[in-house]
Image (cartoon, rainbow, N blue to C red; front, top):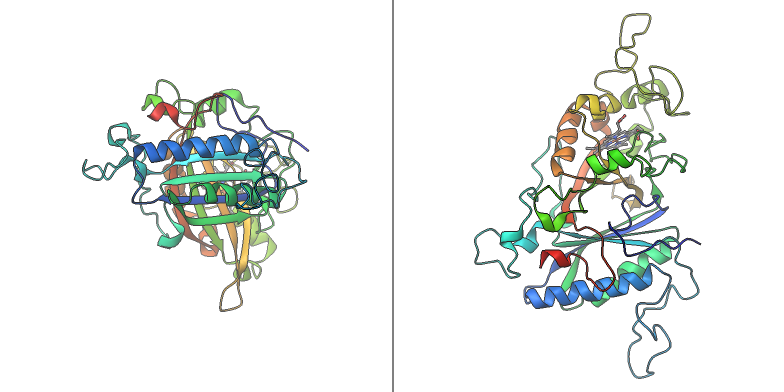
Length: 377
Ligand code: HEM
């Protein structure tokens, strides 16, 4: 079983090869939390995460080594399980930086707010549910074993007791992207390969250009970090499953089997948007998802996608509450905004509903002895 280093130049869980499972959590800070309290929480979270990612219990003594007369420090359900590739990635929401009026700047961070950390604009077709939206802090836990990812979020939530409260969380069971060329491309719940044209960790220049906040970007404390966009996208699966195969492929712009662009070739062939069929119609429709999401339609913009499939039971009409929990990392939120705006014309939208949304500034890597985001304070 793999264990990824917790300390380094960047937080783990971004360019790390996407693991199979996710537990993502967004927190609100409690009203009584002040600056020292926030630093204390981040320190405790950092210390616990450094251990958990190495397959250790939250603290020495853990689940059964402590006093019989105190609740155990670790909840215990990961005893005997290896690290399972666990990564824990922390993000800061706009609420940490005050409301901009000075009065509500509980943490004294208003002057340190990243200018780009604005709430996302409203997009066409948004059907956002407030209970699935926003958050002052987030934690992304990814692992190859769901029990390990859930154990991490459960214990970190417990550590936050009295300081921050879970606002919403999401389990994901199948990765919908590859972040390394060594990984086979997985499939989303529409049955299509997802992640083919993703930014891969081996593309060093693209990662530097599109994913990491540079030292020359504002603000300096975020250097080596990134912006994380989370979107809970419900798929109207029952309607999709009545769509003819050829139409499904036209909507995506790729074949369902091999994932090859409809302009020809194999999975990793670049799509040719000018290629025409015998009737003179473009082989890839201009409203196909890959045509609208492609860098050529968005001023060269790319992003690192790291989302997961989800099925959270069913609704009252007997339809699966299923979809794609979309996660993307980018150097600027504008990259997501540009592509999402371009996707307003996407034929897939008939089968999608964006119900949750959040944006976070993800601080750079954590050195040993530091807590996450220390440069912010
Ligand atoms: C590519 C599906 C939402 C951005 C793709 C591909 C599929 C797909 C099948 C082609 C394979 C690949 O290159 O990964 C979906 C589904 C979505 C969804 C089912 C919703 C449930 C989004 C959103 C964004 C996005 C919200 C960003 C705003 C992209 C990008 C590409 C892509 C940038 C690569 C385009 C290229 O360079 O060829 N998506 N996607 N997708 N998608 Fe999505």
